[in-house]
Length: 487
Ligand code: NAD
Picture 1: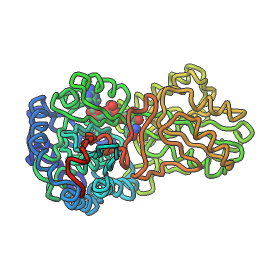
Picture 2: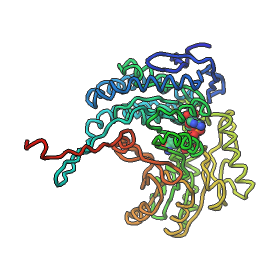
Picture 3: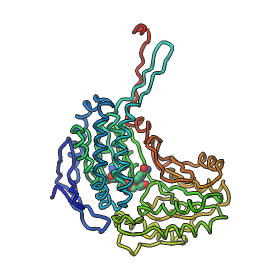
Picture 4: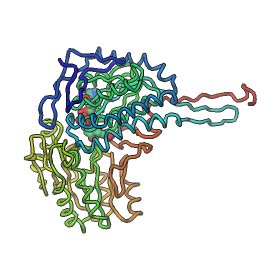
């Protein structure tokens, strides 16, 4: 097997990165590009032995990395952020070939955000301090200690961004890491390992094991010498990881799927709402935060629908490498089958497409932006995450009904509320069950703010100090004040 594959003149190593060395496996899997479904190459698939080797490398590297302290780690991590920025073009084009995401989005947002994920937490780590709680005779010195070895498992829709969102705080807090990238889009995480090495990250601090979820992922989740598991992906996989982690009582952080409501009141800016609803189709709807259940106040339903149709029709469908494209392919034929299966079952159940409803003629993995009406709250299409360009459209008569529809699924990742009435926005935001509520906006993310999901959309929060709450053990050192005399 070749040790590299080449994409648009970028060489990407297809092996694991363990203890500062490239290591090949005898097992491999074939990687296909969603752009043309052609093979990109063979990627190494880790055995239990290789996963174990990576965990041991991380364990061995831990004491020295932890001992550097936040200020010792910060310049190394800042160099990594700089390396990522310098390689924006390479990372962006490789990500596009690997998962079909828009090149323009990768160039303008995703790579920059990935670099920021590293630099932001490197800086914040030195400010994390539990402080001192004074008692009558003692002082409680609260310390944030690195937890140890963190296993990070990430999905394919934004692998570099979602992996660095975990790698950044885990390393900044003083942990060492074993990262298992998604098997449908593993390449930018392999490039991240090279960039970390160039930045001077000591061997073993960041390890990358490639492979499938059922094998490499499962071996990692059940490894007994892991101190934290941070996972982003589907609730089904989270249940498996949770069961594996239970054996060693390893703490888990889960960022999972969504079925977010997009609520538009009659007093909203309808043009802005329509544009943002159409935006939910970008990246072929493979976005966990997408507002896939549109809920509209009856009096504006018809004019808003016309605006949404116009705004959606303006989104160019095409090759994700073209900077004009806004809707590219689904990642895999299995994802296409999943999306179409949901739509076919919804149609058989009485739903009606206002537009879309079938594979797109542009190329094999494309799906038409789809909007379905005549959907009841207990229908599968209203309840389950499709992870494709498929929205439902329901009408409500008042705030109470809007809220009841918004909260009518088991998910709770995000919600969008469009209204010009601030008091109403406040009432809705308080009553909606979701980790994030965006009012008159969408996808605005501040790394200092908490991010995560309620109900089956997740366990725990990432972002700002919440990432450190997870990646650290909080220790209370109780000092008898008088035993040291007065200062
Ligand atoms: P997935 O759950 O199938 O896979 C995610 C990762 O888990 C992959 O690396 C996979 O190899 C690994 N995995 C699979 N089985 C495993 C096992 N038994 N043990 C350990 N690891 C295993 O999810 P996906 O299809 O890659 O991604 C789509 C899902 O991710 C959607 O539900 C989406 O909403 C969710 N997602 C959530 C967020 C968020 O921040 N909340 C962000 C992006 C995607």
